[in-house]
Image 1: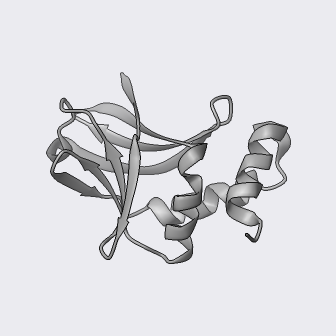
Image 2: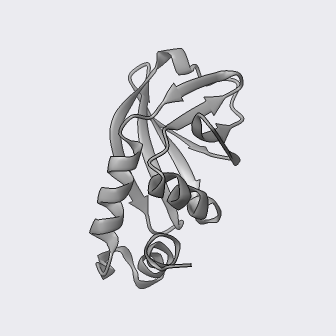
Length: 126
């Protein structure tokens, strides 16, 4: 089984970047990283995979948050998933994001629109 959870905000502070999710049913104490990020080019999202009680959880980050991801990646900030008052450190996040960006760059197997979104958000100087 798998579960899709879309973030609904980002908070950046001195501790790092926090991906915010409103899901009172998710138990972060039962979660661990799979350590893989994949693209959902049809939806224009990045997906980070966790496992919760033998169920895959896909944390979905839509395009509107990618500029914050770039800032955090450029500054090598720690990344956390925050559900309620609990946090889960996503130790492989920055490495996986960098790898995915490099893989998508110029690779139109992801679809022209998705490649343009990745290039605009992560590769073009602002």
